[in-house]
Length: 607
Image 1: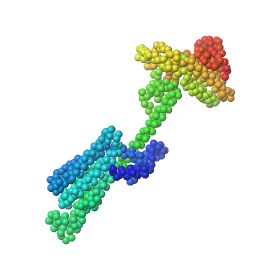
Image 2: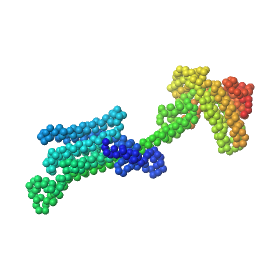
Image 3: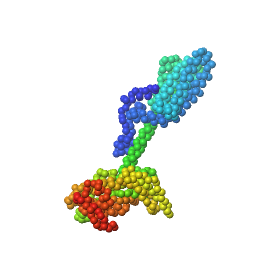
Image 4: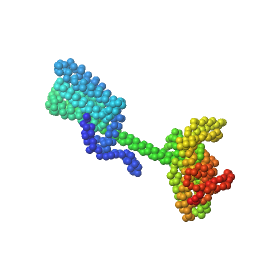
């Protein structure tokens, strides 16, 4: 395992100094100077103070450096194969002559390094491209293996250099193309040039470079005969000068010129080392700059992801708010259909108003429904016209607000049966049984400008109605719009009971609220049971409305009723007379506009 990652792993808990949260930092920075918040870093190249964030960065670096790491392995393998490996095998006759039977041991390091590079390349490729390997080995092992491969390469090449030095000592001592510095630069350490583009972390690159420097310029000179520094002594340089041409030797032997010659020749010998040092520093600096740039890129990426997630959450909250608002305006079935059509047709952009969102849903094609045996309830404030004339508008508004909130609470207490349709002035309209049935017969009406085509689906019995269901003939032209009508039934008894219970509770609740005059509020309540058609009308400020003679009759039951009393039609009375504890008084000959004289029933007790 590389020393750098080993040290970081051992000191992981101690190095963890921060828990950085991009979402929190962005939220706190909204009121700041507008700069992107950045997690703090160690100055010594150990990465972020938040070690969990550092782990994410390492994974990110491994991902973006995938092709460069594989290319580095491939280049190192080719360079080593065409360089040290083939050269050693080409020198087999001479090595056989010098070493005899021990020549086999000399080729062992070459084979080890060749297998090592092949293993590193194969392992990295499998981790990157094999999902099965990824489930077993995390990608961070690519960096561990890569660092280990190059550290082992440096160590084995150091051993090989020491062995070659003992064999080629006389050749290595010269300044020619086979000198030790040329062999070291272009033969032993040539595969390390891939560190320039592999994209390894700064700490790992520095570790490999320092390992090479220590092995070849510190460890080997101190522990073996491969002391490369001996060639730079004055005596060694003078000896090398005398071995050159006779003219050069004669020139340097002149009085006062030997020092100049030694200094010049020493510089010529040291220049390759200086060049190696410059290249090593460039590799380390380049790795530092690349790693720093990758950290900045990683932080920017995390910031963008955090901003995107914040926008997604904001959009999700906006969508939930819109759906909640739609559900508060329309019954569940209609609201669900609007939301479904909206999601199928388009995505609502951020900041779109409810009006725009509803308009894009094509409310003119929302399903209209026929409801059988629905009970409609109307309430009306007694003497409201005189009250409105004698008091300020804000007082009337405040009074109506308190009253309607109380009535809303009564509706919310029984959501399975009751639905608040609308308020018109001082009138409060409630429908009982709209959402209590199940679809019975579906009629699709398509209009092509010349004729209307009808098709019926199979009958489905109501899950809540023991009486079953009954199809309704809708054979009539619905206009130029393509629409869908569905017929639903409900348990008419339950709807009527819920409506009567609401009406009685509304009378009691209203009496507890004071009018602007300071007197208890008195209302009239009327109810009627029959068939209605429901649907959404319009696209600009759309309204959910109920249509049919049942609505008109229920309104007449309220308007012809008495203060503090509830008046119901005979249809409603037939459903609840034996099912509630309330007593009813029959009224004969009640004149109802458009209906003539009708039999109605009043709640016996005035509330």
